[in-house]
Structures are given as C-alpha cells and as structure tokens.
Length: 432
Image (tube, rainbow, N blue to C red; front, side, top):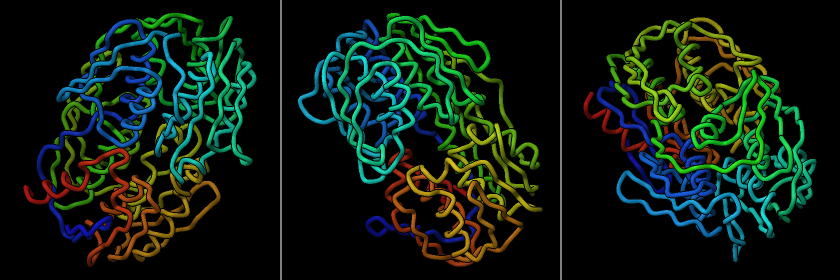
C-alpha cells in the first residue's frame, strides 16, 4: 500500500489477521461533547473519537464558551448548563459534519443570541430545510442560502413545543428537534416513520432529561441535564469496512474488541448473518446505555441479499461497503429505498455505481438504489473518492479483492471518520 499526497494505491491478494482497536463512535462522540456542554457539572468522557467531524464539534463548542480538555484517552467537559452558552465572536465552522450542524442548530435556536453555522464545500451542499422547517414551527428564526443549505444564520429566542412527524427518517433531524425541545415551552413530540439511530434518546435518558419513548413517538419536556461519566464504544460504521474485508479476503481473521453493537447501528450484522457470514460475537456489555461486544470475523462464502424499506435508515452508512461485498456474493443483490444516499457527502449511489463499473463490475442504477449480480471479478482501477470518507474506505476494500492495483484519489477524506484507517489496514496485512 503506497501513499502519495492524498492518493493511496492498494495492492490485491491480502490476507488480513489481527486485532483492530476501533476509534470511538463518531456519532456518539459528537453527542457526548454536546450533551456534556449542556449539562450541569463536569463530564468525563472516555474513548472519544479523534475524527475530523468530532474535532469540528469540539471547536464549535469552545467558541460557545465551553471548556474541553483532553488528556490521553480521557476528555473532560465543564458543562455550562442549558442556559450557559455564550454568543460566539465568529462563525461556527462545522467542517464536514452534518451531525454537528444539525444538532447545534437545534440547541442554538433556543439561545438568546445570534449565531452562524458554516461548513466545507460538501456540507454546504447538503439539505438543511429538513431541520429548518420544524425549528421554525417551534418559533425559531433561521435564514439559509437560496437552496436551503448552509450557511445558517440563527436568531435564537423563545421556542414552544410542537408535535412533529418526520417526513424522512433521520436521526439528525429527530435529534435537532428534541434538543430544541429542551429549551421550549411545553412538551415536544417527534414521530418517526420508522426507527432510526437512538443515540440521542439513550444519552438524554443517561443524563436525566425529562424524556419518554413510546414506540416511534418521542416526547421531551424542558429539563436540566446532569453530568455523568460517558464511555464511547468502538464505531460500528468504521468496523463495517474491516468486517467486509475479513469476509472477502481468503484466510483472514479479524478481532474487534469493545465494538458498539447498538441494534439501531448494527443492523448490518443481521444482513450478513442471513448471507452466511462467519462472524462470532461474545456476551454484550452495557456502557451508559450502549451495548458493546467483541466481534471475530473470518473469511467465508456469502449469499446475495435484498435491502429496502425500514432497513435502509439503519444501514445508511454501511451501504457503500455492502455494495462492494455484493460484487463477491452469490446471487443478485438489490438495494432500494436508499435515495437518501444521494444527499450525503457525495451522491453515493452515482459514485458507488460509477466506481464499481470502473472496476469492471456489472451494476444497474436506480433513482433509489442499485442491483448487483455476483460474484464478479473486479479489476484494479483509478477511483475518485469525491472527498467522501466512506467511498474512500469502501473502495480500499474493493481493491483488496481486485486483479491489479487500485489507486484511490481523495483517500485523505478517510480522516473525517477514521484517521487511522489506512495504517490499520496496512498493519493487518503485515500480520497476515
């Protein structure tokens, strides 16, 4: 594996063996920082991710007057309480993090000051109307660019509770509305069309919010948060790439301890079990409401799978690497109902389809997904990651089972969620 500036070349024929210590879960890490900032007292966070998205959240919170101190694997956050944030002197740059922008918008809507949320070129193309609409219904004053994108100018003030049905299943939109509900008069209820990631609900309960959940109906009332220690589990979405690599590369065995297996995040395991994957899991351990376990993944034959409907929101980050896996599975894999992939860091449907075709794969593209027969022989190619971390990592795995070398342009984007991805992959190859 050779690196030149932002380009990585992957050689085929790998056998991967060893233990992978995964970074802290990116989604939970960002929530841990934000919720700790809003809590009363000092919060100790263990295992916080060092991903670029998490650093963006920390930077925004510091600009809002929150003291954050990291020493080794422990981060201390001196909570300001719900009403202790201060007006930022400059814009709040969320980098590439949609989680930071959407969740902070919910909090800032209820603050007695004006703020502006910005992001990089990729984030500035992503839709923000989906959070602006419910927040405006709560009384928020938010101005966006012409297409409903960042930058967001937020004139914080008094909010009132609403009952809001999400038109699109989204954990980020749900979280933004629930966080705004902490500052609103009366109660706020969010109704999900299908269940989405529940890290926000778990953390609200852990820190003592007046929050109730009845199926897909989530209700919050104004209430204080109280600091408690938080342990961040290993990131399942980061593990997904090594899970697929272990399954596809002959002779491989990869062990991943301390991995978060929250059912709303690890739906991929159910898909792979039905496909015949050789994955062992030890007894789960509860860490501040989040389940963790050790997974052991071994190479083995796989069957094709079909994904649609309620499964998609729980698999949205894993779909690019599952598409890579589908090229090596026996049968025809169909992924539908995944139009949300088109408004991620890149148009992930188009990018995955085009890159797989560049590697010689047969793929049919749909507006909301794709169809992939298998197994197919991939060939090495030049791959454009389009500055999308999950595309860069997914096609690094594809390169392991291709004939000839694969060059990934924009590979540095992996640092958005997994800064040590390529060094970890190299170590597994060396130990194999």
